[in-house]
Image: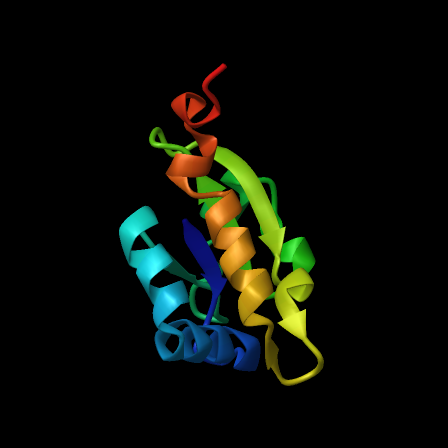
Length: 113
């Protein structure tokens, strides 16, 4: 999973805070994802990478890009849908997002007939 944003972004910093403060969210991230923070700044906009993943910056920052095991984009998540008001994220929404896009949720064997 890529998280595009930067240390200038208050919502990016808040997401980092809430994920570390909530043991359940932190556990899902650590057990289900390889997490990479993709910097977007004046000095390095990472335009080639963002173009490769269909310009996710259109949603603002942070934006989350779920990749499959081959690096192909399978989902782009607008972080606005994970917010709880104007100051933080809703832990239940964040946890649901992570669980719904985890490798286990995407594995065919999870849905045995």
